[in-house]
Image (cartoon, rainbow, N blue to C red; front, side, top):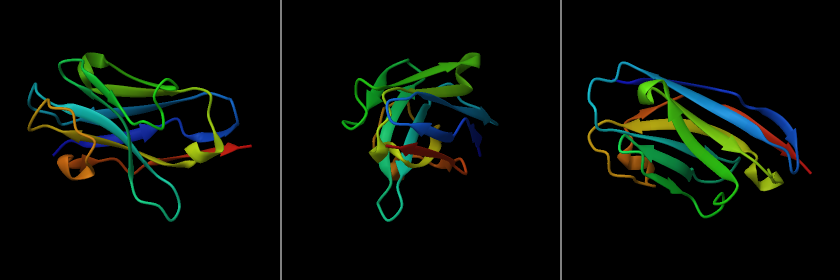
Length: 124
């Protein structure tokens, strides 16, 4: 099973920027998707962004135009650059991956491996 570790969370003022990183280890195949989800207190997990091994990307409507997902280190690291942060972006952010396919998905159930999460707090 792929192990994921997130970093980069913190507190930032409204309009600010923050960069999250996720490092994957233990991946065996060449087809995969790396994704970010978030969960605010009392709310369901929400899709943020995903990037496939074919370099295709998908973004949630709430973050389009403000967040950018990218990868490096041969695809073992995926970053989420967040700009123009809003109070509603406050949440725990989770990295996830699927290794059975390179098809992008916004459904949490399609992702088998998850990180422990990193907290992002945006103050108005």
